[in-house]
Image: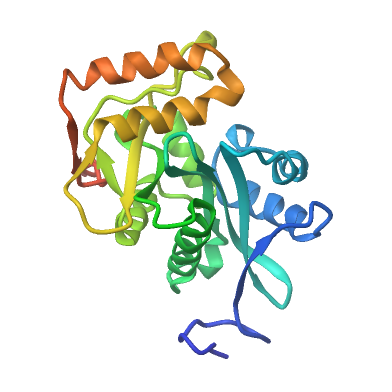
Length: 250
């Protein structure tokens, strides 16, 4: 059957809701979904850590989990954060079961994510950031790993662009987690402004990453935030460009 928004669902209408109870079984369902949906599940926040995140709210950072369910089965979800020190949102993960994609489920979750962030901000949040793999910087082995699980890194970027995300025009690195413990260099920083925009303030980008990195990097987050700001070369605003790198020919 189809729900009231035309989604092809079976047995019951799609429901998108916020998970607030750390004992909610939807947390485990979200964990299973994200592991199945993403080619490198070892890089994701484990589901058994999420209850602590939902309870560890402070005035400067709040963690949220939204799930999309059909017949109480989690078929999509997004884990994201309100960063009060920066005045912005950051998404750690957003995904939908492969068999349920292309039906507007991600858009429903993205819209609800903005409503949740607005409520946390007590007003109007300017936008939400996310870091995403750039497939043009993946090795052939990594691309093949994506294909084996039915994932398409170019398609992922296209879908995010369809939601309103655009790439922040600055070299972006996740400070740790790469080869030999160095930075992860295969990611780009994307931004979905609440209202259409062609630029994002550099100060917002830097403040967001400082706030996002601080819980796991401590004082080192300030160093990496300064490095990010230096790459802006004094620009007060950074361009928002297409999130879609070219596909390889042939």
